[in-house]
Length: 130
Image (cartoon, rainbow, N blue to C red):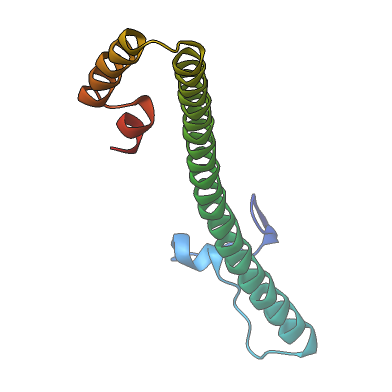
């Protein structure tokens, strides 16, 4: 008897190649052989399903990462717009206080000159919307 490193003890064969060493030489399939074949089939199907699930989960992870990046970017834009709105509101409040605090016509003329300057350049809010 000759010992084969993959299959254990085996009869010496004259003409078998690599394929004949990998395949079992069985005359008929008994109950044990059917169970073994069925088990291999179930294992193969489970391996394919596992590979498909792993692939789907990695694609979903990448998609979720992109969505999270988009949300962070949008949140930063909203915060910037809120800061710009607050700054514009402060400017407007300061302009109203200056206009209300002065009762002479020359002060109103200076305020009108500032308002013309302000109208000629876009506000921070308008720049972010563009």
